[in-house]
Each structure stands twice: as C-alpha cells, then as structure tokens.
Figure (cartoon, helix red, strand yellow):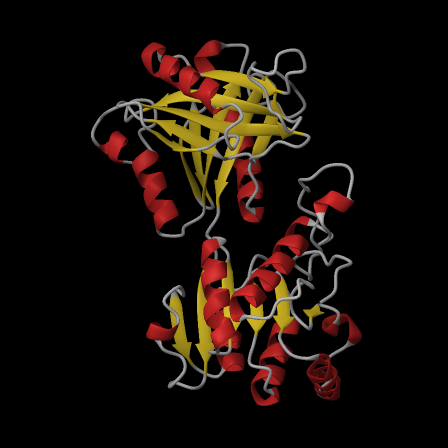
Length: 381
C-alpha cells in the first residue's frame, strides 16, 4: 500500500489457476517494488525469478499478461515447477491509475469486511485485459467493460465470496454465461476465520499461539477472571471472562459463528464442558468442534450429553479426544496436534505420513455439508 499511496507503480504476479501439485493456491501473489525489492511468493521459489522478470517488464510496458509455468523435463535449469505441477500467473502493473479502488479494498480487508476483486485475465479484445470489478455483498465498483459482463460476474463473485473461494470463471466476450473467450479471476477476501478456545489453561495459551500463526482470529474464554487475562494469552485477539456456553450462544445469536469457525473446548471439567458443547453441537453452522480429555473423560462427557438430549447425529460432530495421534506431551506439542487435526479435516487429509502415500500431495477442499462444517476424515486421536 505504501507504493500505491506514494503514487508509484509496482509489478504484481498473482496465481490464478493451478493444476496437479502446484505449491501455492490461487490468490497467492508476489509484489515487485520500484526499487526492485520483493514481497510475497507465487511458487515457494520454483519460478520466482521468471515472475520477477515478467513483473519488471510489465511495469515498464503497462501491458498485463497471463503466464503459464510447468515442469521442465528437458532442461533442469529451465523455468519449471519441480513438484510437477502447473500454475497460471497473471502479471500486471498496479498503481492509482490502474487500480484506483485499491485503497478502499485495503480498508475492507483491514476491517474484516468481505470483498472480492474480479479481474479480466483473458479476452479476445486486449483492451479488456486487466479491467477490474470490485464486488461487495451489497454493491460493486468499477467495470469490466459492459453492464452485461458486470452483472454476470458480480453475481458469481458474490457466490464465491460467500464461501471464501478464489477461482477463474469463463464467459462469452460480453459476459454471456454459456459462451467462452473471456476469463475472469475472482479473488475473494473473506474475513479471517475464528478460533474460539474455551478454558484458560496452559494448553490454551499454546493453542492460541498456533491458531494465530495459522491465520485465525483467536478468542480465549473462561468464567474464571483470575486465569482469563491478557498477560497469559498475548497471541489471542480477545480474552473474555464469561461462562463459555453463554458467550458462545451470544456470539451465535449475533451471527459471529459460521462454517469456518473452530471451537476448541479445553477445560475437561463437566460444569464448563457440557453446557458449551450442548450449544456448539446444536449450531447449524460451525467448522470444527473438539474437546480435550482422556478417554474416560470422553466417555463420561458423551453420557452427560446424551442425558440432556443430544442425538447421535449431533454427537457425531464432536472430535474427542481432540487432535491427531502425534504422541504429543507438552502444551506446544498438543497445540500442533490439534492444529494438524483442524487442517486435515479442512482439506480432507488422512493424517498419515506422506512417505507412506502415493498420488497428489495437495488436497482440494472437500464439499461441506449444510450442517456440518469441515468434513470428517478417518483419523482418530
């Protein structure tokens, strides 16, 4: 943003499409500043040099272009992805002239307001390439080139924004839905997902740090004010003193819990666990619900939850004991175990060593059920 605000021009390379084992997801980007410095990454090192050169050229010519990089079999030193994947990268010059809406888009992202940026990356008419449409849930700004194209892309972009997905959409040259010729990359900037940690214990401090590292907005909640303090949980965005079940119910009522929200109950005390899990497991939309405790604690907890009327379907959404079997002992190791389970369920991973498996390393996100959040895997704690 400093470059844009200063009135200068930066080169930007953005991953817009991937095939097979590409190292970065669509939306990953690399910025080349006027002084030649670099921020970000598009491939973890495989093609950074080539993208750097392309971005430098585009800032000079002002002509955006779509580049494809893939594995090179003949020349080990040629530009290629050693992982065997293929990525499409859109390279463009970004300035106040080419992207006048960038300032307000930055504010939306900073304030956790959902916004999508739709950019034409392919079109029979070169004048369309690089045009943008900024799409919000209730408004849009800019134009791709025609009212018809704007309407079609805005509608589809809102659908992608609602589920936090970024991908290339294809239309006819004027936005015809059944046509071909125009490709539009929609980059979705949905609010950061939340991690709600109940139980202000040492394991919660380690998990809060791990969750923040993974990009979650972490809240630690406990009814005991002597334990729920900012000093004990510096990595958490919020530290709340309240009964867990009451806080969670209020957050759900306010619409602050959705299918991306992760709920981790670490108190392993029935007077806290059972009421908050009753609320969590009956929420219509939540990504992950896990509870800490021994297998004896788990059996007792399940009996108590059944006794207050939770069904088998509702109980099946609970991950308990929480985490993957990593042999974890310390709070920090346990936090890694829990984070690994969350990641595996989000992307459909099996939780096994990659060395024992064949096929693709990177998983596509599994389809999520209407009521369930992250799809369960076959792993167990």
